[in-house]
Amino acid sequence: MQIRVSPEVGAVLDQAETICLRRGGVYVGVEHLFEALVCDARQLPGPLQAHAGLFHAAVERVYRDGWRGRMPETSGEIFHTPRCAAMVHEAARLASRLRSKDTLAGHVLLALLADAHCAPCRALDAMGCDRGALLIALRDSLAAPRVGAALPSQTARPAATSRASRGACAR
Picture 1 (cartoon, helix red, strand yellow):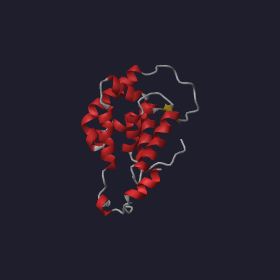
Picture 2: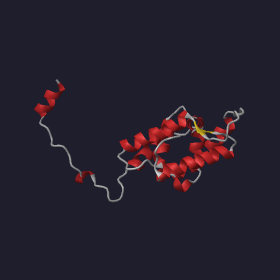
Picture 3: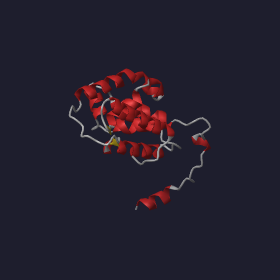
Picture 4: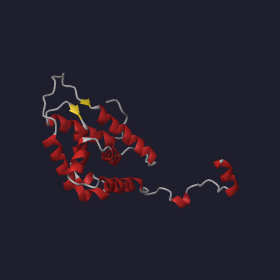
């Protein structure tokens, strides 16, 4: 996969590749990416650390209920599924939207949890997890101001417009 990523996301992708190989696959999918993100509760963003057990149960469910076919023979090269690549692209877009300097592992988890059709989210939904609450908590933790970041009162704001000029724009 030829995508520029931060060192943190690169480490997660490397770990997902290792997980994929350990499980006998050659196609890194979102299930491997999810497992790499949640395998260590300490690397989860603060509000989600309490849900580590739920995430591990979802990983087990994904592999228990997942596809059991045989992979075609390959030359030993590792591939990323289109959905996995899309998650990384979506994470970069979300990081930009949340005004983050780098794409973090939390952004990848946010992108993954937002995709209701991926296997980990289907497993979480089947287990009765409130993904909406997880998404809100994760988004809020990623959007929290970093140490040394300017507070909203310190940032430049556009000049207020008069009511007449706003009305003219609406016409």
